[in-house]
Length: 129
Image (cartoon, rainbow, N blue to C red; front, top):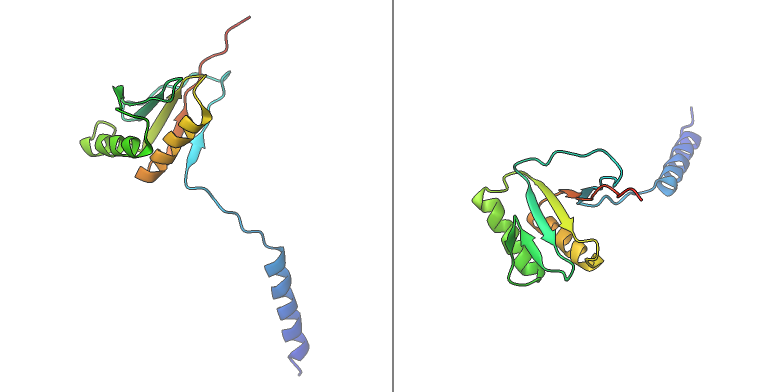
């Protein structure tokens, strides 16, 4: 019994599956974006909250930071995690509607650097017009 044709078919199948396979690159941050018109959710006690105002200044758990540098934000998040005031691994970003996109992305980047992977962004219910 000759195995050469069987080996050829197996190699052709191997090449086919290698070419047709797609590789998905998953991001490290998982972001929960609640819908503005959705149901209200309870805020847990053990979360860390970053507040971003319209000019891009940050506050971590209602403590205003001295500047809006990413290094300062990372150090503030690390101190909150070490102090145990935000023992959970959840982060809530509360940004002003007029805050720059860069400020929110910087907050998410700082969260990724300290290992916070569950991020929620707060919204408000739309007003009836």
